[in-house]
Image (tube, rainbow, N blue to C red):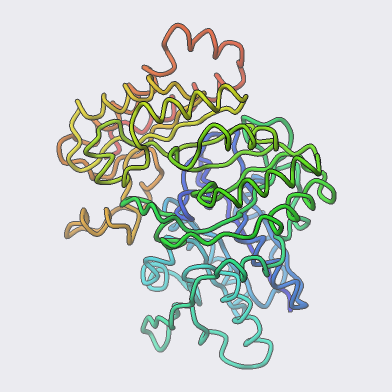
Length: 470
């Protein structure tokens, strides 16, 4: 059967990476473009089952809706990636598609639809919402269609039946052995040169070596999308994929898309040993919690090609850190030791910080700025606290009125803070960037990387344009 998978075009004047924040998506800078990993996984399992899969990446290829419509063809099944900020636009594209190919089964993936499926089903002509991990659900749906069975009866789908929304049984999440059994993502279906990030020279690919995060931060989209139990692929299976990317795709830059890459210390060390021995010339970066690393591990990661690590630090206030981030850092001093160890071994660092927790005051926000300056990572990201659907923060902060999910960009405050207005939260985010990057030593350092400095300046201008959105 012919199956078409679509990463829709971005909103006007924005870039949205739909796979970030656990599939809820996030507005990103112009220099970042990740491949649609979920769609490539779905395509790979469909191809393994003998079907013909295509992927249109409207984001990477800078397509318009009209461009996408001209490339539709007559597939039997069409799937679209979605995000919180783009859901309305994505569903509008669904409706346009159904006008042209009314007999095709059209489904959507993505955590926003997965956690609020009624929103999509009531407000569009979409046939099904894939809840949770999409690979086996989509494969079973296509198999049922091919056999002449009801394709909308499989586990993991929410559908419209007789004018009513119906939620089929949940599908269990894939464990380690099952993750190893998945075919590698079908990267050959997309132009490799389209995918880049500002901190690496040349095209990149993404790899997901594990899913889930037991830290269970109250605001985290990855937890509701992938679950609390950490589920890792074997070191050998991950190495085989990395080697395939280098030798068959000709790509030597990889970004791991795990929320907690270094949870299993021995697995990481085994993977590093394989990379060191093979010496394939791979450069890679990952994201993990500060408390999962120490100097010997960092040293080996550097020898194995790790060039950058991102850390979710979030708040500089100890009470907020403990309540919302579950103690992701042991203490300021230990966090500084890990940051300095990365620097010593030539690994760049990136710190993620958040402003706008419910009881956060301006004083608490400045504690976060102080911590960012004290740790002094190579780059920082300050975002507005966002209550993604089904997180603990969402369930506790949601009032009688529904959130405007189009504002769930990661940079736009959405009314979570009770001790600050949304305008104040936006102002503190801008202040945080100024304090971090406008220090004399940092300015001199940034001048040595004018392209990155210009991208950050443009991002700052974008933050200025969102002031008052709340």
